[in-house]
Image 1 (cartoon, rainbow, N blue to C red):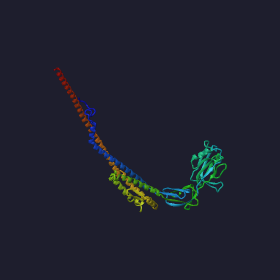
Image 2: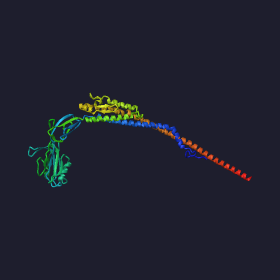
Image 3: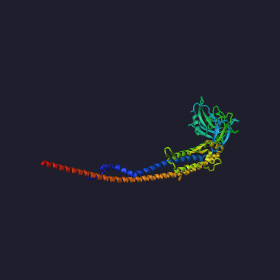
Image 4: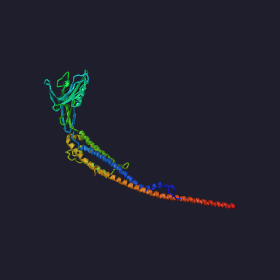
Length: 476
């Protein structure tokens, strides 16, 4: 009674699969556990160094901002209702006393009244020219503004209404705006030019039908009249009289754009142009914050809790110690090219704390900026470049962080190879054990079957013997 056992253990009643698994776990389990624990530790270290790399990159970004720092000034007005100001990179420090006696104004013209915007006004051409009028002559003498060009619009059956004229002027986009105004008794074409006396308008009609829209400096009750005269801005800066065509003046004070908003009330406005210390402080503080982000993560990774006996993941790690050492030395070292008094970041208000972080004394930095702005900017540019090079060396090819992460990745690859080989050996061992136990199971099943057969035969013989004895007894 022999045959193949398709399910291990059926013949013998032994849980062969469980037995094989236990044997495999005894042989290979400790190796698997060791390798997996190593991989877990390495993955945790890889994550930790990834965090440190991110911290260092943030420091690098803040250092790039310092390296690119430029002189910058801010302008503050004592009365923003009279004027405000902005600066550009060409500004210099200074204080200015400014009085505004007149704001620039654009000339406004209005046509005679029409019954509706759809009224036809004529066809032909209207030519607009910017310039100035001499009202001492009769009629006023017009002098064209040489810095501008004339503009001609054409009116035909498609745009010869009052509204059509306004639309044509606006679409031409040459510096004159047009709108239709209802003054209560009719509709009038209202025109507004650019500000300043050099931008008054002369309007020439190319056809008699458009004569009502012409203008040459004299009001016409049946045509165009002036509703607001062009005028220049008038002001004085430190006692110097200045006239401007616009209320936005960018050529009065070097690097400063003045925005006139009102008239002085007898008291000059004080305009202070000072170093933009807030911009400098912001960039230095960004570096300090980024550095502290690294310092805080280092503190966690290299910590040791004496109560719980728990050590940080990278406590005693040589790469971490090297990283911290390079940054600590970099922060306190002298800055190449820095002027006397600003040789280190410490001279600019940066302080190293006992816990490895940095602090910024913004008051000290502001005082330094106000004392010698150029020297401070030069020093910070140098610090940004010097420490930026350090960051590049740390994170670049061959840098300590790059090398360490490359090493960890290599170690993880080796562990995966070992686990793969171990798994192959386990599968081979499992197959071998299953085959051995299958053979044993088959043998046990056969022996059991033979035993059952013999037991049956012996039982039959015993039954025959018993039957014979009974028959002999009955015959006697």
